[in-house]
Length: 270
Length: 287
Image (cartoon, rainbow over all chains, first blue to last red):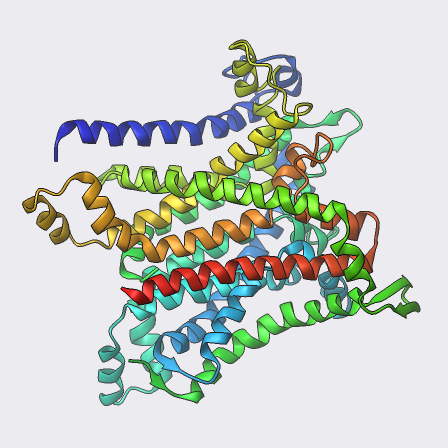
């Protein structure tokens, strides 16, 4: 490999990362300023460093409970999505059955349905079964787009595991559940990691459904952030601090799956 | 080859039940609304296809549909090549890989309304870096009043937000190419372009299918980011389909019309995605 090419690669990467990071830096920068300084004019770094915005987030119960609400429905959604998608993805990757292709495409169509279409029906449905304003309602609603994606990604990973492994296990007298949980699932762990990351990501950042299905008790952080508008205008500092805090769980998740994203997809067909 | 076994349905059943609960029931509610004129829960009339006919003639739908297509195709035209370029520029080994992966994933993890807020701030000419720089450089940039600037800002925001997804998917596709292929190419003295065209691109086809479809679907459903950034304005230059729909359903509470709109909207996405899906899986089958 010649040097000039590597330099060009490095240049592309650095330029793109700069493009990605500047707005995020601006958010962090803003979260460390007072509102007066934010609106006072352009400054590349906080001249008057303050942690007040973060103090608001961690001491005001409406803020930290909304943060916990978000974490709770996102983890529920991850658990539900993986639990139902694992067997289904196995079926799609190993068997042909009546209507399998139609079923697969039908699942995908749910990933395509604009959440805006489902706002009112969801509101009515979850109100009528008494789940309105609970984290489980949001978790179930987010399954609409996360379950199809989970099946899709997992199917790719599972298809790359040779079928001979299943057959050998059955010959050795393994029952299906025992084979599935003690042999198969550990083999596709990277795929599960990647799937969990995508479920986390799409559920954590979604606003429209999460806001419509909750009011007070289960209010997620994204909805809480839209309520920083007060008589004196938008509280930019607190909003920015909330945005930074909202980034942290995502960074933790991507840190755990970083090797899987790199190696994992390579294994999968996806 | 996959075995034919209808018992596999038992494994798919949980997904089917769950998705049926969260998709078919609401969908039927929408269909139900779309053929009725609803004044209040007890006063409603069956109106047949009236809402559909009205919606299909509604210039608001036509305008936002055109805007939506222009937007989604611009998004694909920028993000797919850029994502591939970024993926090709990823370091191959070492600590750089993890660092790049985490930094690349950052925009994906920011709640969508915060994405809007970030760009709202950074594009402002008084307190935002980009807006200030552009104006200092002599450009007359203002996303709140100039339609062209608003449009470009929304587009750049999307590129910033989602190119990483394409890059991550492509990177994982590139990782699946064995080193032997590159060694063979070196022996044949293949040019970098030939390596890309005949080794890397074919291996990327599957991930690109996912990337193109995800980006198309999601950009076609975009709501939160432009809503926060521009509120759909100035005028209605950045009002895309989801926002038109939400205005109709929640703002004006025009249930019948909104429901008919929803179904047409959904059918359009379905149709376009189906075209992508068949085109790309057919191309796959030919090899």
